[in-house]
Image 1 (spheres, rainbow, N blue to C red):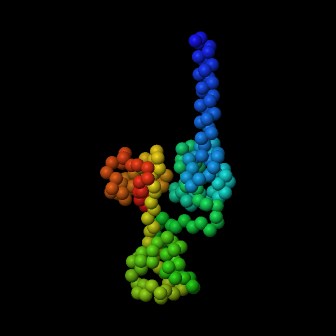
Image 2: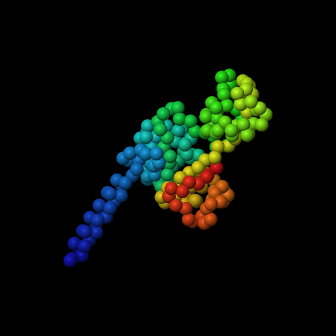
Image 3: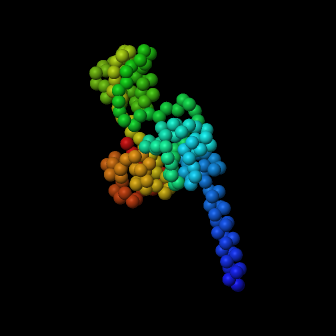
Length: 187
């Protein structure tokens, strides 16, 4: 086989690989719950493609700013405007007329028992009043490890540190040994 023929085969193979490689973009063909950002993607472009807003994507991905980079994994919320993302940190809430502990607990993603435990001054769960200030406990956030994830990648994604992840997940003995499908706490 001549050198010219070998060169032609190599060039043809390179063209085929590059053409097939770009067709693997998750955002170019469909929009699933999680997408991997491809080179050239923008946050507004992803939002438009998936029928949601930039702000909804930012709310669903704590620590996400205005820039995305290739290889970054993003959670894409539904396009519904009624989607609520509970706060990661704790806080207070001023009871409004018509509120119940069950309604408040559902809104913040905690249980009524969690609210009662955080507010020992509430003696009767059915007797809260408008203007009353109640403490909302922090909502734990969990993440299901995906194929190719590392603790460093997950920590960067959520804006925390590997050390914090280790403290929250004592079941992880070796930070280099996590597996797809494993559920870990990130906050």
